[in-house]
Image (cartoon, rainbow, N blue to C red; front, side, top):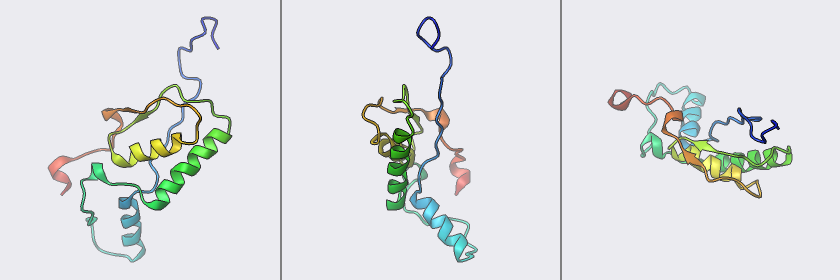
Length: 118
């Protein structure tokens, strides 16, 4: 720690991608069957796509791993507004005895092309 007791820069930065989402699952399925489909038939907006049961398991496992790997409690947690990232963060943080409330940060979301996506 610096003499003043405050770090100027983070001593540790953990970057994670969200766990498996319904969209990931459907995309993998289409690839597996060599489908010519280019559009995922998911009945929600991209921002509202949830994690799968496997994704929830992955997120909890990541949290347990990080907590066991002596990663200190997080000073801050930033997540995009997407449901899958918020769910991932919440489940990862269950592995820690104490943690900050995740901050939703618009600037770290996926690229979004608006009406051009359809």
